[in-house]
Amino acid sequence: MANGNAVREAIEKAREEMLFIGPDHPYYPLLAEMVTAVEAAWRQGYDAHRAGRPNSNPYSWRP
Image 1 (spheres, rainbow, N blue to C red):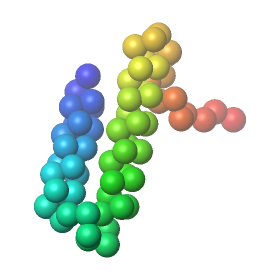
Image 2 (image 1 turned 135 degrees about the vertical axis):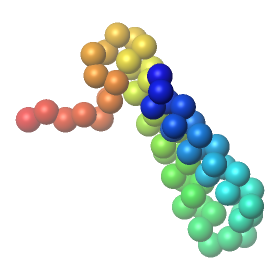
Image 3 (image 1 turned 90 degrees about the vertical axis):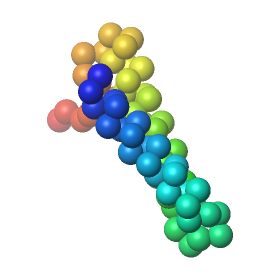
């Protein structure tokens, strides 16, 4: 899954940035929340696709 690699790379880059800025930085909680949310959303989509769901985005919406 090519897109999965880009997501994982972005998550790892953000984690490294968190180590660089440290927990006392004002943006640290926001960055930590975003990293966790993106990873969880990606994992849900990946798992849904592996389970046979036709669309790999569990958050898609159709009217």
